[in-house]
Each structure stands twice: as C-alpha cells, then as structure tokens.
Image 1 (cartoon, rainbow, N blue to C red):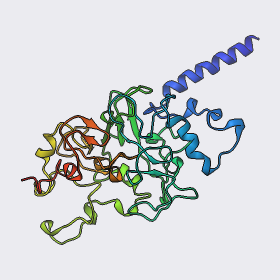
Image 2 (image 1 turned 120 degrees about the vertical axis):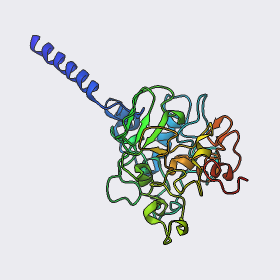
Image 3 (image 1 turned 180 degrees about the vertical axis):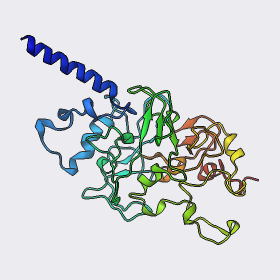
Image 4 (image 1 turned 30 degrees about the vertical axis):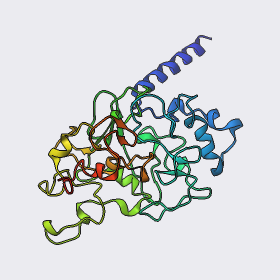
Length: 316
C-alpha cells in the first residue's frame, strides 16, 4: 500500500510540474488536459466530415456553453478578434466572410473545400496544437509545408512569437480584438498572411512582388500583406501621422512591439475579420473614430472609411 501511495504522489507531482512547464495558452481548448475525447466522440465513434460543423456549433454556436461563439450572436463585451462565420448555423448573409458549407474556391486561390463544403476543421485542428495560435491547422489549403503562427499569452509580450494575447489564460476577454497584438519576428514577413495564403494563393503581396522599374513607377497588383510599413513611400500614398492619430486604429504587425510605431506594417488582419462580419468579405469598415464594433466602428459605414485610415487619396 505504501508503495502505491508513493507512486500516486509521484504521478501527482509530475502532473503539477508538467502543467507549470507547459506553454501558456491563448484560451485554446482541445489541447492537453482539455482534450476530452467524450466531448466530441460519443461512445468513441469516429466522426465523418458531414457531421463536423453541427458538432462544433453545438458548443460554439450557442451562448449556453462557455465555448467562444463563432456565429453572429454575441454576448456583451468588446468585439471579437475573429468576428463571426456565415453559412450553416449563422444569420449572416453569405459572402461576408468564411461561409460554412460553401464549396466555392477560396477567393484569390485554387483551393476548394471537400465534400459538403467548408468545415471548421479546414482551418482549425480538432485535436489542438499547444504551440499554434487558435489551434490553426499546420497545412491550410494547398500548403505543402507547415505554416506556424506562434503565440504568447499573458501580461508580457514575447517578440519572437507572431501573436501576443494580453489576457490571462481562460479569461472571458481572451478572444477580444483589443487583447490581440501581432508581432513581426521575421523581418519583412507575416506568418499570419503566409498561413492565409495556403488557401488564398495569390493574396500574399510584399515588396518583392511589385511591378515597375523605379520607386515612383512601382505599382501593386493587390494590397500588400507584409514588408511595407505605413507611410513607407514618404507618405505619398499612405500617411503614418494620419493613421496614428486615430483612436480605433486597424491592427498591424510590429517588429518593435510598439503600436503605433514607424515599423508597423499592414497584413490580412488589418482589413479583414478572420471569420467574417456583416460586411462583404469580412472587411472592417473602421474610420478610426467612434466606438469599436465587429464591423469596424460607429464612424465607419463604407469601404472608403477603412482605406482612409491610412491612405490620403480622396481625403481632401
């Protein structure tokens, strides 16, 4: 009996040490001790693709559970970082973000969802990944190599990580937009944009893909998602002062860990909600003034309000 008691005590001590040594999570469930088989696999049964969304939304589509809501319904509190999905289980119209059940190829790409259309596990790993932001899959869409999006959670930023969630693990506001910041540990690159490119193949745009011979002649084929800071061309097209003066700035990458700062660069999350909202393509109509909303802010009503946070053309 003493021997068994000693073994139990050793196992408990090991569990405590392991928990203390494990990386802090950004509220991600389905990882480690929170990967509870019976919550998703009734009787140990394997799920098929057509059952995935209904299962996920049984927790993430209702306010009756503690799981973060991913549908249009939202409780009190700050706007969510990802916004809301449309399609199955959502009241949002199609085309306002990622549409569950849609079989349409990803805009700007060739990847198309499998049978039954887009499902949650096309983007999120059901069994989790303790080192991957929001349990994102490692190889989205047509990606042929792992696309890591690392993160840190807590009061202190770690600029070697791609994302900083400045909230306590398990806190109610860990999914709020004002708690999420994006670092740029890889100079001139965006891990976030590179992950999105797994499906939206042609949407990754940086300084190396500009056309034209001289600086003044260079033109973008689409909006840059990395490598270009606000006001980079001497405020000729975008104005750092204009953007920095707003109260509701769109999110940017930062190598210095400071916002606003002259090293801040735009990326996918600057203009789009990852899940979506009530605007076309999940765009964030944020003028920079008024109260923040999941659609942008109360001062923004159209696409140009978003553009004019940074761009000076047409503002006179």
